[in-house]
Length: 387
Image 1: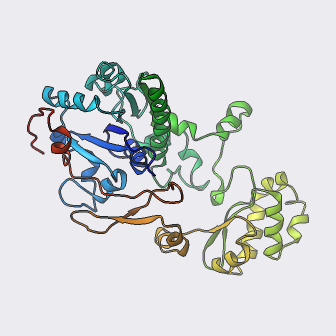
Image 2 (image 1 turned 60 degrees about the horizontal axis):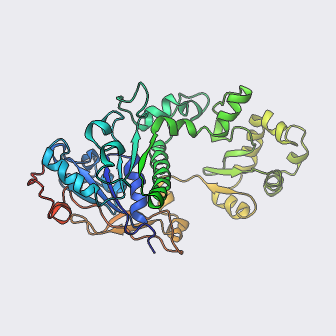
C-alpha cells in the first residue's frame, strides 16, 4: 500500500533539503516530477562528483532523487511557462528550494498559481525565509549550523567549533517542509483551497536547540561542548574507552547507572559520594570518566557488548565501513539496489519507512528531461535541447 499514490507534486529543487524531503514522499507513492532547467544542466547535484554516472547524473544526485521523474523546462521562456502551468493544473503541490526572493519572480507561489489551480499547495524551502531582510541571500546547511549556534556545541571542548558530520539541517528542513506540505494538502482536499507553506534552514537549525534553548532562554544556562560527545546534563551518557576501541553507554536512568557499575565490576562506584546522585555525577564527570575508562579498558568492545547488551542501552562506535558490514545492518535491510542505465545494480539506502511491515520499493531518478514526451504531450511545449 502506497498512501500517496495519485498525488502529483511538481518540484523546482536542487542539492539537499527539498530533494531529501520529496524523496520520502516518492517512497510513499507520490508522483514527484522534477522541473529542471535544461539551460543550466538541471539540478546542480547531477554534476557533483567524484562518483559520476555518465553525463548529468551522479551517485550524489541519485541519493536525493530516487523514484522521481524529470521534465526539462525553462520557466523564463514563455512557452515553457505555459507548459508548466498546464502541469500545475493537474498537480496537488509545487515545491521549491529557491532563494527566498525567486518564487514570486518565477511565479511559483500560491498568488501566482491559484487562478490556475485554486487547491494548489506551494511549499517554499529557502535559506532564511521569504519575509525578512535576507530573502535574497543564498545559504546552505553548514552556514545555518554555524550561525544558529550548533557548531559551538559540537566537538571536543579543547578543539575548534565543529559541524555535524552530515548535512542534518538540510535533511531536517526537508522533513519539516514535508510535514507542513502534507498538513496543507489535507486541508486543501477538504476545503478546495491551497496555500503557501514556508520553512527555512536557519529556522530549522534554531529549532534543533529544543530543550537547550528553553534552558538558556529561561535560566540563562548556555550549552557547552562536553568531552566524549556526552549528554549536557545526564551522566554517564558518553563514549568510553575499551581495550581495542570505543563504546557508547547511555545511563539515562539511575537504574542503568547501577547496572553498568555492577556489570563492569565496580559496585563501589554506586555508593561513592562523588557519583551517588545524578547531580554528583554531573559535577564529577571527569573523575567518573577516568574510573569507567580504567575498568572498561580491560576488555574489548565486543566483550563488553556481550556483557552489557540487554542490560543497559549500549552501542559500538563504528566507522562507516564497520556500520555497513555489521550483522544488524544486514538484518535491518537498510541497503537495497536499483537499476540504472550505467550501473545495473546501483546500491542505495532503503526507505526508513515501512508500510504494513514492508519498505516501499525504490527506483532510480530518470535522466534530465526524460519525462518530457510523457508529460508534455498535448501541452504544445517548444522542442527541448538539453544543455
